Length: 415
Image 1 (cartoon, helix red, strand yellow):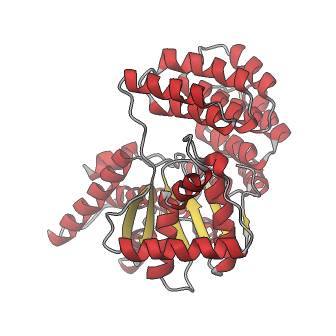
Image 2 (cartoon, helix red, strand yellow):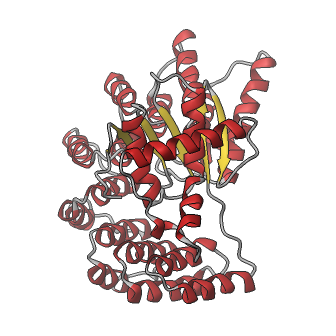
């Protein structure tokens, strides 16, 4: 089973679901049982173990696996090395990933792809492009995944022209036919930059039929830039392709909520109810002394729930002292302003941060993994918390990393 997990693990995906988390935890449990049975792991086992740690953001366990390789004088070949580079990137330790990448004696396209992807999700678009160019200078040919992560770097860094150039080079320079995932990057690149008309034109001119991922990317961009017309058009296609996917309804509902069209919000929510579609719950994981703690929105199941909610009160008072005004437009329900502020206070990442402030040493960064995109208000308050409590906070949401330090974020509010 560990070998199967290694085969299905992807080093370019940064989203986390309950199912992914369950598989990864099962892999860790299987490795523990393997140790108890006195059987020694081979290369495939180690890659699977490290990949599980990557998916969970379990830095302590991933670092232990790295130490196991070193202690037992095992070969740090390109397979294990690439898995470790990917793990350190996905656990928020970009510096360690870079150090390890530089130390590897052999680096292939997959290894470069992992490092470029790591730089991309940490907001270092320019450095990712430089590494992409270095890879080509070394004579390595970019693969499909290499193009994807490099265009991702351009998309999340606002490097639109560079991203367009890479897309055009696929056919003109490398003789590669763009696939759906490359067109997905192209639509995301243009959409994030607000070039929605151009994105729609590119999407409609594709040589293959756009899939749900591309339409969802366009819908997300429409929500970001408040373009109702494009959002509704994208949603229409999504309902035809994926009538039971909750995220398609939620994005449109959120767009209506952001401009106060509550009747439309209720209509979309009623569609979900009529079709038996349930909203994916938001959750956050936080690593405290090697143990992963999970929080849902409004969660009170944690053993230290009382202390956590008291800390939330303390955080809210500090936020007021620093002049923070809650972005109640991010609350997607038609309730009173005071109630909206309460809803925002108990988002899963805030509970996770509050617990980390209580349970972890002040000298250590706080590391959070979130399965959904971080909302605007949580992003704003985390910047303030990093300054008020003098703590580095690293949040990995479904798309990228946000490094909060001294009141600013590495994404420069472009995400």
